Length: 417
Image 1 (tube, rainbow, N blue to C red):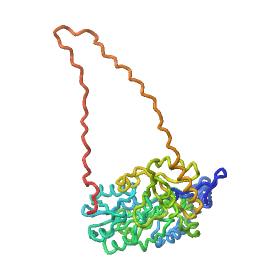
Image 2: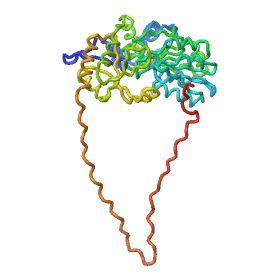
Image 3: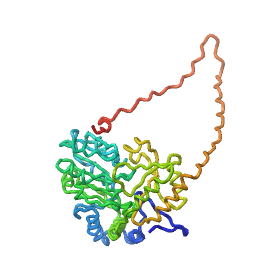
Image 4: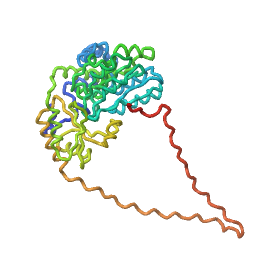
C-alpha cells in the first residue's frame, strides 16, 4: 500500500530503484538490529540459525525455480556477479559475450576479467527493433565461447530479453551462462532451471522490497565445480538482520499474487503526454517505462513529479554505457510499477506528468561578471644593468607535452560481426 504523508497520498513508482519496504519487513529488520545491539552478533546468528540456513533458501528456491542447495544469500547482484565471474579460469583464446544492455557495474567486472585473462570480450548485436540477435548467436556460438552474460531486464529500459531461448541456444556448448535478474525478480517469473543458466543474480531491495544490503545468487553445480580449484565461491553473506528481513520479504511476495495490467497504462500515460519519447526497444516490455522530454530536462521532470507526490527515478546514460549514449540519451526518467500500485496511481501520474512538462522552464540563473584580475607587478632589479653587459634573459615558461595513454593491451570491445 502506498504511504500517506501529511494527509496526501504519495505514489511510489520506483520499485526498480528501491521498492517500498512493507511494515512487516521493516519491523523484522529493526527488531533484529536492536537484538544484535543488545546481545551481539554471535547471539544473533544463533537465534537466526533456522532462518539463515533453511528458511531463506527455501524461499529463494521457490522464487527462482532452483534446488535450495544452489541458492545463496549475498550483499547484492553486482557483488555476486563480480565475486563469482572474476575467478573464472579463462585464457586468451576464450571469447566472452555481453550485450549492449549490460550495466556499468557488470561491465567493469568483465573488463577486469579480460585484463586478467586476456580473453576476448564481444558484444552481441541487436536486431533493428532492439531485440538481441538470436540468429547471430546461433551462427557464431562455438567451442571458444566460454561465457555469455545477459540481463533479464536492463536497468535503463524495460525490454525483456528471451533468456530461456538464449539458454536453449547455448545448452549444447561448453560456455557458462550468467543472467542478471536484478530488475526481473519480483515482477516477472524467474525460473533458473528453464533458463538453463549457471549463475543467476539479483537484488533484494527492488521489486522484492527487502533491505538494501541483501541480495541473492543461484549457482549451478557445474559452475561451483569449475571454481572449486580457484578458491570456490567467495560470496559475502548479508548481515543477519538484513537476511532475516529479506526472508520476510520473500515470504510476503510469495503470498501476494502479482497485479497485472498496470504497465500498459503507465506507457500510455507517457505516450499521451506531448513532447515525450519512450525509450522502449524490443518487442516485449516489462513494468519499467523509461522516457525523456524534448524540452524539459529529466531532473526537472523528476523534481516536479516529486512535488506532486509521485516518486520516479532519473537515469543517466552511464548506467547502460553501451546502449543509451549511442541513442543520444544523456538523462531520462524511469518509472516502474509494483503489485501494490493501482490504476488510480497511474491516473495521478498521468496528470502530474502533463503538469510537469507544460509548466514554464525556470529562467537561467544570472551569475555576476568575474572581477578583473589585479595587475601583476613587474620585478624590479636590485641594481641597474651595467653598460655593455646584456641583461640576463628571464627564464621562459616550460611547456608540458601530454603523452596519450597507451591503449590497453587487450584491445577494445569487439563488436559482433
